[in-house]
Length: 361
Image 1 (spheres, rainbow, N blue to C red):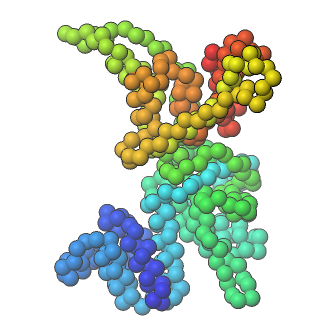
Image 2: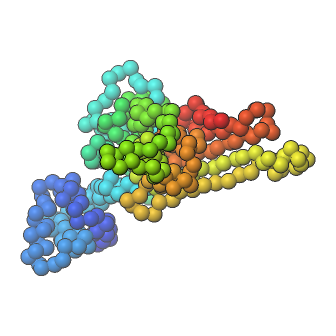
Image 3: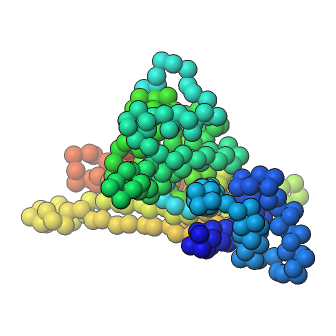
């Protein structure tokens, strides 16, 4: 039990002080409320640090004399809480397809449906669920019976959005076997699934991208770039800062928590007409990566500032025009110059989730 106690305290100490009330409510309900832990810390005249709060919580929990199985259950619930409060893992996406003719099952019975799906395949699994706002996090730990006893496989986490009509689900970690995805899809009332290219570490931002893409909330065509003085009543602004600021805000509306963006470009080298016998250097590859270190800065802020400063000249290129419609944070650009079969320079942006390509002359 000492190893379990140490693991319990170590996991609980990772939460912030403001997160303790919600975590304790999920773990213990009214048995060990937050007010009781706070009063105990005040009585002992200790500092309210996460490590101290975790020590006090562990002491109060030991007084209830939990069994080894009960302690293991609390540690697994803490793992699920850790993922739901700090979803900073690499999340991958699937789209559920081919729904069953029966009405979709209720989310209140999701745990039972997942366990039932595993039992139909002669498998056993521990299933836990927690909901934070509109996001529902599910943890599945499959049990395998061996000669030495029951062995628990590493947990698989799923998250779905109750306010999203489109059947998209994110999961972590990346799986090598398909049966967890198949059984989870079946528990939600779908016969099959397909992989999608949405992936990232901020699952809320990923769902926002899915919502924009599926609802068509962002227009495909960018606004016109008009350079004209702006009349502010008593003062007429002849500078270009205000024009570019308004233009940048219209091209890239809103903001997300995306902190990295990569652009891979393949351009035709203009010297191919002069040196036609050098096919290995006919294409020039380049890569641009935007990486935001500050938590208060997003990729959209960087691109808008680049437009205002003139680092991205207006009218902006097609990959900036279509940025708000991209379902992922990396794109590939293939430019076909005048030496190709096209008469004019064109740019094609690839998107595996969207069969429509964007072109700009």
